[in-house]
Length: 146
Image 1: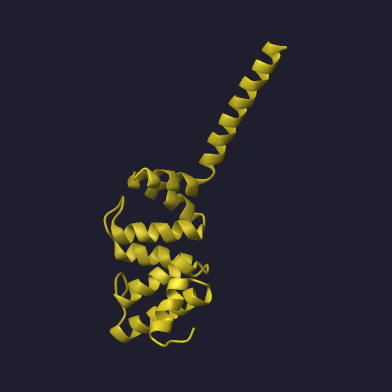
Image 2: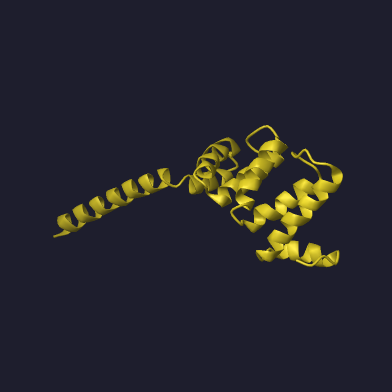
């Protein structure tokens, strides 16, 4: 009986390890997160890019912020804006908030000062309407309704 229980335990552990490995390969976002936490930004970029290309708005946001900071890649504001915009259009409030700042600072965008400010306010309002508290606070501070 002990041998049977041991055999079942070994099979169960083997299957769960196999299952975990397969689910991880199918979940590039979590692989990106795992590498990011380990500060292996090159691998994090690789997996976040894969998730972002599959339409994952959170991966797109993080990827945009990594490009903005130059984590795992050469700093590239154009790429940062590209990925933040993709996520922002999917109603990701964190992306909208960060995109608002990039527009205000005219990083990675080719707009006039007035247009960049208008675009910044547009994204900040969207973030606020989507419940992002920091955006709500920023707009309230300047008396801008959202």
